[in-house]
Image (cartoon, rainbow over all chains, first blue to last red; front, top):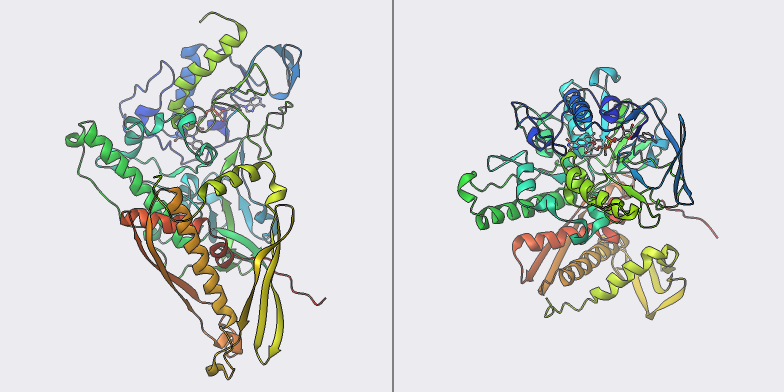
Length: 383
Length: 182
Ligand SMILES: Cc1cc2nc3c(=O)[nH]c(=O)nc-3n(C[C@H](O)[C@H](O)[C@H](O)COP(=O)(O)OP(=O)(O)OC[C@H]3O[C@@H](n4cnc5c(N)ncnc54)[C@H](O)[C@@H]3O)c2cc1C
């Protein structure tokens, strides 16, 4: 196992200070290694996740070689030729587990932003105090964007949040963590080959959730209540102004309808599985309140906005992978983690790799088992 | 599912989607209209040819539209105002979307009616107040749909049709427009 940094590197280097997992502790489990702390319903801080993964590395005795950066992978006669910062390696099979979120995505719009505005990504951002005083435009309303918008607003800054397509969820539904419902109702076990639009499922933005001790919901109504101003999807920069889409209300409708359909499937599951009595009564939440007249244009030169935070998602980095298995959007072509175009190559840790659960830490166990079964067959090993 | 007949050939659209994923060049269309000034603010616009799927094409027949201003604008009212054509485009595009999505979801439609209202402060175009924009302040579309579906399913049809609408996008997002003298 080659790791360019240390064990749990992404958690040490690429997360902001206040981040907690949005998955509850009891779901933070790795193969043979459940959560054993005293707060199963809580949410780990970054330091706790780092420690959890470190303990797993010791427990599993995984042969990790830290400080080894893979700079190139090429096909060789019977496998792969790997070039690293510590020398060359030949292997018959290769598992790419380099992560799905190696780089923040920053849209091309950023090039038109006047230079006096500071631009940061979630990889640069640590805490509000490190940003200039004054207004902040947060772009993107998924987990990262809503969390950073709330924290920046609490620091006293005026905050504008540009909202595109998003996934709205309550933190707690009928008395249970909404991710408990995802887990037990089978939504997360839906397999990749059963999903109608897999491309879409794999590109689905993260849900508007935050892990806090209060188990508070952080949806757009919460943010509006805190004084965050909502505007539409950022569409263009023209004459020094940001232009936002006028389609904001439909973004709200799509997310509200989708949330209600999902809650409906939970309700149905509770009835058909005889669990209805053990959870709270059916709930429906207030529709997302549209601002009276959302702004369509904001002057970027007027001083209102001092900082832009790009919470527009993450992408993998395969610049070191010199085998033609990456599509024109920068994603690995694979069938449930089996890179069929290049025998002996596998992937783990990608969104909806083999099931919806794959996107999360707790999805690795069944994925790893199935992918490694294939790998062992490829090598002709007995299983 | 098989008994739903909204008259939309969804299979053809789904097949086209798959085919065009592999050949994005063929997906490049150019739509055209030509106009000819008549008199006053009256213009005649014709639409016939377009380009798509790699070649020049044409509608079955030419369509001719008259655009003018109403009598309260001291014009002859030979046709609707240009900005009303935007409402025509929006209503027809969203309605087509509702029908297509309904067909795809196996929802039988009985009637789909919409009213579209664009609120317009004409002080902008008259130059009476530099702070008033020329275009619509806002647009409101109200659908009345009779279908074999729940209210939520109907709302989802309307939401999805906005999500996939060319005119909704063109009106809600900026478009780079070049106007030049030939
Ligand atoms: C902001 C954020 C919040 C998240 N919150 C949650 C959550 O609440 N719950 C949850 O379940 N999941 C969450 N996730 C997803 C979570 O990251 C994954 O579930 C899990 O951590 C993925 O682990 P991984 O080992 O596959 O990838 P990573 O953690 O990205 O690890 C990949 C490792 O590969 C190394 N590497 C990459 N390239 C090379 C190379 N060329 N040479 C050598 N080493 C290399 C990296 O240094 C890194 O250590 C979150 C992700 C992000 C970005």
